[in-house]
Amino acid sequence: MSVSPGPSLAVIGAGVAGCALVARLVELGWKGPISLWETGRGPGGRASTRRSRLDRGLRIDHGAPLFNFRPGPLATPRALQGLIDGGWVEPWNGRIAGLDATGEVLAPPHDPLVEGTLYRGRGGMDRLCEGLLHQAGDAVVSHFGQLVRHLRAVPQGPWELVAADGEPLVQADWLVLASTLLAHPRARLTLGWDDVPLAQAAGTLADPRLEHALVAIASLRAEARSNLLLVAEGEAARLLQEMPFRLLLLDAAARQRWGLERIAVQPLEDGRCAVVAHSTSIFAEEHLDAYGSDSAIARQLGRPAAAEREEAVITALTAALHQALHPRIPYALLARCRRQLMRWGAAFPRGPGLPAALSLCPASHIGFCGDYLAGPGFGRVQGAWSSAEALAERLVAAAAAG
Ligand SMILES: Cc1cc2nc3c(=O)[nH]c(=O)nc-3n(C[C@H](O)[C@H](O)[C@H](O)COP(=O)(O)OP(=O)(O)OC[C@H]3O[C@@H](n4cnc5c(N)ncnc54)[C@H](O)[C@@H]3O)c2cc1C
Image (tube, rainbow, N blue to C red; front, side, top):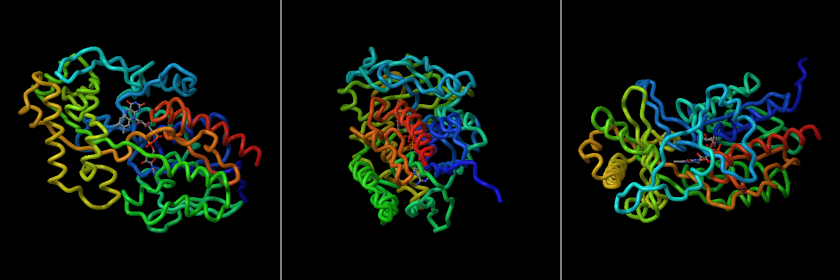
C-alpha cells in the first residue's frame, strides 16, 4: 500500500495567485500531492495573453499589459529574481505618456498601476504564470480547460471537486480558492447558477470563520472593462508603432470624453502591431450585455455573443480610439484592422477586499488568495502574488499543526 507523503491540496484558479501559491508551496517543501484546476486554456487569468493556433505570430496581452511593484510595506515576491534569471519576466521599459481631453500628449497622470518598478512577461504576459508553474515543477499537476462547478465537504474529511456534469474530479485534504467565482453570488447572475458552491458546501461544516469569510466575499464588488483588441498590419502598424508611447494613460477629462482609460501599443515580432484600448468602467457598465464571441464567458454560457451588439461596441470603441489618437492615424486604417471585443465582467475588485486574517480557515482546511485580498497590492498583480506567498506560509504551518 502506498502512503501519501503529506496532505493533498487542490487549488482552483491558475492566475497569478494560484500559480504563485503552488510555486511557493513547493519551495517551502509541501510534500503532499498538489493539483491545480483552471477553466481557461492555459495559465494567466487576467494576466494572460491571447494567442492563436492558426496565427502563430499573434500575441495580445488583453488583460494586464504589465505589472508593478510599488514602494511600500509589501516585499518584492521571492520568486521574481528567479523568473527574470530564467527569461520568463523582464523589466518593462516602454514609454508611458498621458493624454488630455484636447488630444495633447503630455506627462502621464498619477496611476497606481504604473508606480514603482515595472515588469512584463517576456514574450507575453502569460509567461509570468508559465514561469511560476515551471518553478513549481512536476510536483504540481495542472488541469486546464476544466471548470470546477461544485464543491463537497465533510467535517474532518477531504474536499471533493466536481465538474459541471457531476463527475468527481479530485479529493484533497486542503482546498484553496485563487478566485472568488465559487464563493460569490455573482455567478447566479452572470452564469445562471442556482447556488453559490462554497456556501452550499460550507453548510455541512459549521465553521464560524468560514461563514465570516463567505459573508465578506459576498460583499465584494468588481469593476468591468470592455476592451477593444486590434491587430494592425502595413501602414496602420507603422503609424501605431511610431506613436511616442507604448502605454497612453488618459487623464480624468479625457476618460470622460472618450470612455477610454488606457491605450496599450504592443508591437509584434512579425511587423504587425496589436493595440488594446482599455475602456473606463462606466463605458463597460453601459455595454455589459456585449461580450466577445471568443471570450471565456461565451464558452461557459455555451451560446454565441449577440453579433450586432458586439459589432456596435467595437465600432464605438474604434471611433473613441481614433478620436483620442487624432490626427495621428486615419479612421479608415483603424477600421480595416482585425478587431475584437474583450469584456472583463470582473476586471478589478473594489476595495477594501477580504481581510487577510480570513485568508485561512484552518478548521475547514480552506484558504483564499488573489487580488481580492485586502492590502497594499489590492486589485493588482502585486496583491495577487503577495497574498499567495503569504497564504503558502500559513498553509504549511497549519498543515504541520495537523
Ligand atoms: C483589462 C485589465 C487590465 C489590468 N491591468 C493591470 C495592470 O496594469 N497592472 C496590474 O498589476 N494589474 C492589472 N490588472 C489586474 C490583474 O490582472 C489582476 O490583479 C491579477 O491578474 C489577478 O490575479 P488572480 O490570480 O488574483 O486572479 P485571476 O487572474 O482572475 O485568476 C483566477 C483564475 O481562476 C480561474 N477560475 C475561477 N473559477 C474557476 C473554477 N470554478 N474552475 C476553474 N477555474 C476557475 C479563472 O479562469 C482565472 O484564470 C488588470 C486586469 C484587467 C482585467
